[in-house]
Length: 156
Image (cartoon, rainbow, N blue to C red; front, top):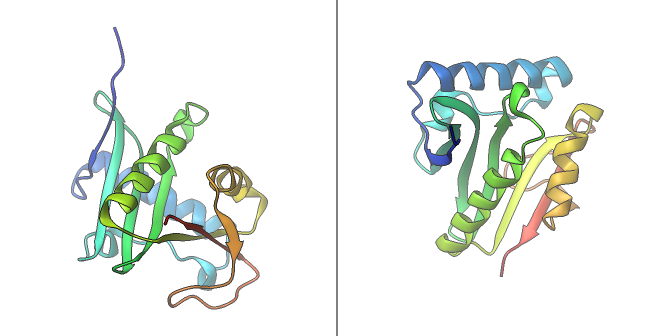
């Protein structure tokens, strides 16, 4: 049987998606102080200005990502997560490529993100750097925080 990896708009009422998001938040709070956790909960992911996608293999939801519009030329990558059992399959790269394509389609000139500074987040930081993201200072409503790494990619 051939697997078909598919990225589509995420259903924030789907139990599989809710489990993935709960795991994401659990990991964020386990690795960072509460005041340094900037992950979006379900209600924030459903807000206007945020687009949420999942990546699935058949009926298995394996990951998710969101894109938040900060202004008409600047987007923020949010809630990027691959299920622990599915890591190492290139799904994070597929999700990131999807958001990059959508950001360019929308005409964004810049895409930024906040991630953790702890070792747990090193694979994510390496993936972002591989795609050209560079460390920068805080953007949007963020403040300087030793538990956060801010990265941006110029798309123009």
